[in-house]
Amino acid sequence: MKKLLNAAFVYMIAGVASGLFYREFTKLNDFPEGRFTQLGLAHTHLLTLGFIVLLIVLVLEKVFAISRSPRLFAWFLWLYNAGVILTSGMLIWHGSLTVLGRESSAMIAGIAGLGHIAITAGMIVFFVALRRAVMRSTAQPVSAPAEAALA
Image 1: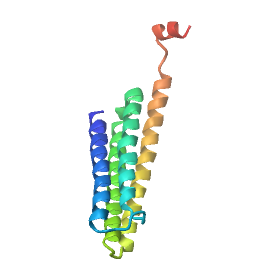
Image 2 (image 1 turned 30 degrees about the vertical axis):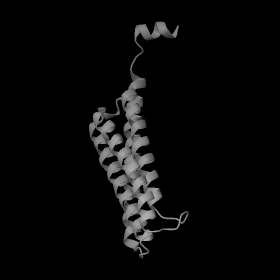
Image 3 (image 1 turned 45 degrees about the horizontal axis):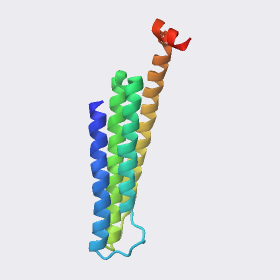
Image 4 (image 1 turned 180 degrees about the vertical axis):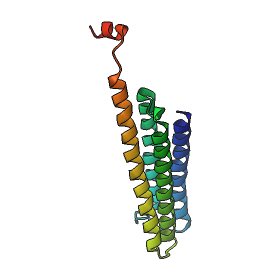
């Protein structure tokens, strides 16, 4: 649980910092306000996919002990975090090129696509681990004090 909390905190800092970078970098380079750049998307990807999703996973871990399937949980963490970092990095790179008036390449889009694939694979592994944890928790018999509370 500590890893999830720390990762969520790092993503929150990175998300806020990328928003600051977006605002200041566009101002510094006289980028027209309102014109699209992917720098703003990096900000929201880091905050939503990193910070918020990992806080939700933290709550689900507390309730269902998902990490009791340690291999699945480790695969989820590695795939998901690699995907979010790769995708966000490419958004920052592509957005910075846009602000600087430089041409982007298909390589950037391809690498960002690999990041999205890793995020998707991580989510699939997460749901497999979550399903196992939920099934494990519903298979346990209800204890006597819990039965009394239900009555």
